[in-house]
Amino acid sequence: MKAPRTRLAPTPSGFLHAGNAWSFLITWLAARSRGGSVHLRIDDLDTARLRPEYVADIFASLDWLGLDWDSGPRDAAEFHDTHSQSLRLPLYRGMLERLARADTGGAGPLVYPCGCSREKARKDSEAKGTPGRYAGTCRAAGIPWAESAFPGRAAAAGETAQEGLHLRARVEGDAQVTLADADGGALDCFPGREMGDFVVWQKNGLPAYQLASVADDEALGIDLVVRGSDLLPSTGAQAWLAGKAEADSFRQAAFLHHSLLLGPEGGKLSKSAGAESLLALRERGGPLPLLRFFAARLGLDPAPLREARDLVANFSLDALPRADIPWADFAAALSLR
Image (cartoon, rainbow, N blue to C red; front, side):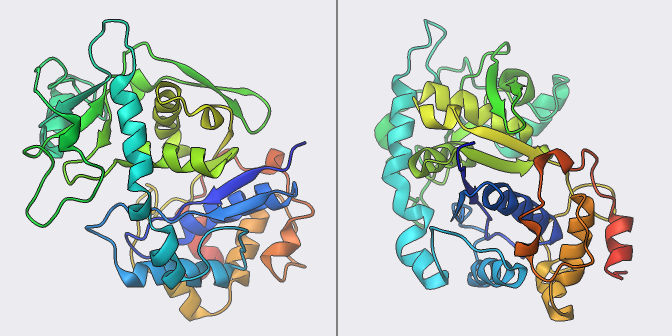
C-alpha cells in the first residue's frame, strides 16, 4: 500500500480541546502506521478570532501529545513568516477564477453573488424546510458582480468586497460525487442535498473554508484526508468543488471520517478554556491519561503505553470505533467534573 501523505489542520480560533487531540491522534497514526508523512497546515483565515495565544496553543498541544510532522511550520514565528494562509491568497484567487469560468451547460454561472446575512440565510432555509441548506434566495436575483471586486486579498479596515456581497457556488440538487473511502470502499456524497449553494468567497474579501481547504490540499499533494464524521457534508462540498476547479489530486484522495468525542450536553466539543481544553489538561500533568483513554477506544492495550509512538505498530483503521465517545466516559477516565 502506498505510504499516505496527510495533514493536521487546526484552526487558531480558540484553545484546542480533547476532541481535537482525538482527531490529531487518528490522523497521525493513520499516516505513521503505513510509513506516511504528515504536514502541519494551520488554517488562519478566520482573522476575526485569530489570537497569538491560540497559535501558540497548537504547537504546545502537539508537543505535549508527542505528535510530530514532516513539513509545515516548526513554531509560531515560522508559521507567520512562511505558512500563513494570508500568503497563499493568489492560490485561492486562481481557484475562484477557474470556478467563475466553469461551463454549467446553460444552468447559469457557477459562481454568483449573494447579499444574504448568515441570519437571513438560516431563517430562509428553515422557512423552506431545509435547515442547514441554503434556500437559494439570491440564486436567480441577477445581482451584478465583477471578478475585479474580489481581488484575493483581505479587506482593509471598513472595506467589504463589492458592497458586502459574498460569492456562492451553484450546486444542483441532484449533484453527487463518489470518493475513495480509506477502508477501500466507495464514499457517496450529495452536496446539493446536504449543503446546497455554499459560500466560496466571503464578504471580508477572503476565501471561504471550503475553497481554501481544497486549494491547500491540492497544492500540498494530500492523498489522505482525515476528519470528524460531522464534516462529511464538507467533504461532499469540497469534492464537488474540486471537480469544477480541476483539482484532480484532491478528487483522487482517500477519506476517513472518524467518530467524535462528545461534550457534556451531548453535542460535539467546542473550543474553550474549560476542563476539556488541552491547555487545562496540560496544566494537570502529562498526556498519558488522555493517550491511554484514546488507546482503549482504538482497541489497543493502554497499560504499556508511554508515548504516542508506542501505538503505531498495532494501530489499525479497522479498529476505529463507529460510535461517538460519550462525555461521561471521558470525564470519568480523566477524573474531570
